[in-house]
Amino acid sequence: MPLGGTGEIGMNLNLYGHAGRWLMVDCGVTFNSPLAPQRNEQQAGGGQAEVLAADPAFISAQQQNLCGIVITHAHEDHIGALPQLWQRFNCPVYTTSFSAEILRRKLAGSALLEKMPIIEVQSGATLNVGPFCLHWLAITHSIPEPHALLIKTAAGTVFHTADWKMDAGPITGRAFKPAVFKRLAQHNITAMVCDSTNALREGFSVSESDCAAALHQVIKAATGRVVVSGFSSNVGRLISLARIAAKTGRYLALLGRSLNNMVGAARATGYWPDELTVVDAGHIGYLPKEEVLVIATGSQGEPRAALSRLADDNHPLLLLEQGDLVIFSSIIIPGNEMLISRLVEKFNARNIQTLQSHNTALPIHVSGHPNRGELDLLYRWVQPQIAVPVHGEAAHLAANATVAKAAGVPQQLTGLNGDLFVLAPTPRLWPGFAKTGRIAINSH
Ligand SMILES: [Zn+2]
Ligand SMILES: [Zn+2]
Image (tube, rainbow, N blue to C red):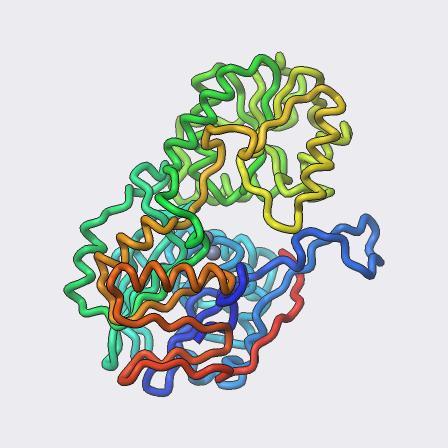
């Protein structure tokens, strides 16, 4: 039963129930109408995003029945609400080392750091949590250590994909391995609970390695400073940019707290290659312009992030000038169109070039989610009895179900947050089983 993330993008929270016990998979946040100023702008500066989580009342009211929380990967829509909501669950958290590192960094300075039992699981491990036997399957996505889960119970087996794509060159971690997923057919999978984000897109997603090649091509041709803005959690992208800096004779610097935090976490967990250096951002302003490559936060136009300050020419460490280039290695998250176009206009008014992914045929940004071709293949390999599309709005879920049907999955269960998806013994949907809603939480 999803409490969040099914019928919407963001704040994923899924519950699996068996033998009177529950297992939670992910506990994420979403941003209210992304980054738009709140109507009641009492805070100085305004423009603050309101952070929301799924209302966990259904499960917190019976926390004694909750035997564990699994975090599949460290994206905010999967992990972001855990620091604020965990007290209501008060049970062990199972995740792999990179996600555990991100979680500990979120808890730093809070009493929860000592209180929350974080159990680090090895990729490929099998572990019993209450009546659930969990097997962690490494998959590829857009952050280190994404994992799918095989959840076995006496009543049946669920394959929970979490967020994924088929990436033969993911930069961090191992390449996607078809054989691992082809073998799942032998497990007689009752249901495959699957990411629907890009179910409306035909074909296949583009590899992170192709994105690296595209960024290299663009940066190699640049003559002035280059600033790249994207999603901080994409450590593979950050590593690609560090390698491009080395190849093009530029020094790499990071502007923005979340970038420094991610690179720190990647270093602490062995994901950052030792030979790739990052210079102190305080030095970058003194270097010749053709030797500067900066990664900056704020690709969504966040008013207080580094990129906005560069656009306003009031960043304390770096001033851009005519002939410099700003690359958006990102997408425009719906709702942020105005903020981003204002940012682009400010740069262009100062003859600073900008490049967004929709301005070029080169893949300067690639998604971490599966297109229809990938969904089709995975359904054909796994051969579940039931497809349960999650992680998407209603249109994405419906499109995912259509792909599943065409791929020969006998049954599709499409529902929304709060619906109980009965998977065994007789599959059916029980709409509105639990009350759902959204609660505001403080951002970390
Ligand atoms: Zn997600
Ligand atoms: Zn994700």
